[in-house]
Every structure is written in structure tokens, then in C-alpha cells.
Image (cartoon, rainbow, N blue to C red; front, side, top):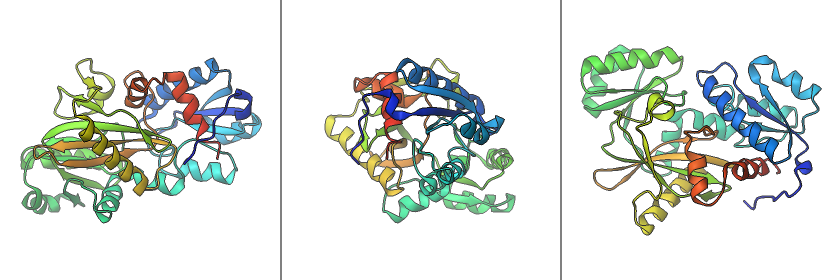
Length: 310
């Protein structure tokens, strides 16, 4: 996709940055949205910030909005619901369309698509109820990681190294009102690949003191380290970027996004998930990767907004 380049902020019209809402990631969304709003303001864009918990659609009509920068993480903003409403209102928006948003919000359906595309992803087991625990252990063994299928920011995710922990993790993930699955634990290094306009940005390697990149490690810890350059040689990094791009395009993700992937102890990549509305906070990974490409935060936000000019 050849991006449309905008030189005059007036070409965007009046932009609404949507944030907040009622999902579990509301606080993170407000932080992201506020940072985006401030960046667009500095770039001279006619922009307003709207918390979607306060009936945003009436506000969009009353404020004569011409396009939307979507900063809503999680359900209600990243799952196709908001995208469908905006399309009915004929309002252009940043990020992926209804279908891709709905698909990638569901981690398990994402994995099924990748498997159909012959792309590597860890083995998994769907946990419908506690009676599935023994069959899960028999198929995957320990350690495992248990996840709700439709939450982001690692909410509801827990590692399990024995039956009791698996049961506890299942019960915790079940609180999020969606399907729950267990996934084989990947022993290896964790990487993330940001993509902007079908172009992968420099790969980041995460070094985490916790068991995994959980909510605390993402947003609260000062011990999580981000390595960019990532430590791979040029050919390895290029291969990882191309795999991430294939995983991204295979799900029809557009505009921008972030693909999370491990390289396991056998030096094989393992795709984990795609984020179609990545965080834009001080701890967020897309701005880090963009900075390594010489794209500062304000310019990154501008380029993401350009993707709404379809």
C-alpha cells in the first residue's frame, strides 16, 4: 500500500482521538490517547479528545468530525465494533477494518488462521471447563501459559507449572467472559515487530525479569529492558521482519500494528499475537521502534493518521 502523504494539517479536517471506554484496558487507552492528542496538537491538527464512555457518537456528530484516530485498546475499540459504527457513519479511521479487527482480537482464531497459512505458532488446547484440565496436561505438558482469548495487555494471563496452578489460571482467565486456552510455554527470547504502512520497523528484543511480559512488566516495571538493535544479525532480523509481515498481511491487518514473536531454544520462530491498536504510552513498543528509524513520536502519530486517508 502506497501511503498518502499529507503536508498541510488542514487536509485531515477535524480529527477525534477516541480513547477510554469501559474495557479492562481503559486506563492504558486514556494514556495512549492523551499522548496522541498532544502530538497532533503540536503538529497543528484540529483535534479533540473524546472518552468513548461518554456517548462519543453524538459528540462526533455535534463536533463535525471528519476522521478518527482510534486509541481504544481491547474490546469495544479493537474488536471491530467501533470500526463498524464508524463505517456506518462514513467516518475514516486509523487502523484495520471490521473483519481484521474482529479476527485479531481473538487470539485463538488468529492462531487458527496462522496454522492454515503454515505459519509457526505454539501448540494450544481450548479449555471449556475444569474437566478439560487432564486432557490439556496430556497434550501439552508443563509449563503452560493460560490466556483469555479476547483480552490485551496480558490481562488474565498466568503461567502454570503444575495441575493446581493450571486450574487456578483457568479460573482467573474465565473471569474475562470469553474463551480460555492453554498454550505451550516457549523457552527462548521474545521479540516484537512494529509495522507501519506495510513496512516493518526495527525489531525489539524484550528482556523481562518476570516470568513473562505481563501487565506489570509492560506498564509498571522499571526492570524490563528493551534492546534495539535486537541482537540478531541482519539476515536473522530481516527474516523475522518478513515473517511478521506475512503474519500481519495474512490477517488483512492494515495501516499499522505490532506482531509479537518468540525465537525458541531450537532457533525457530513462534508467532504469539497481533495488536491492531498498539499502545502509545511512555512504555510502548511502537514508538521505541519508530525512534530507531529516525521517526519521533509526533511524526509517528502523523504517519498513522495519514493511513486514514484512503
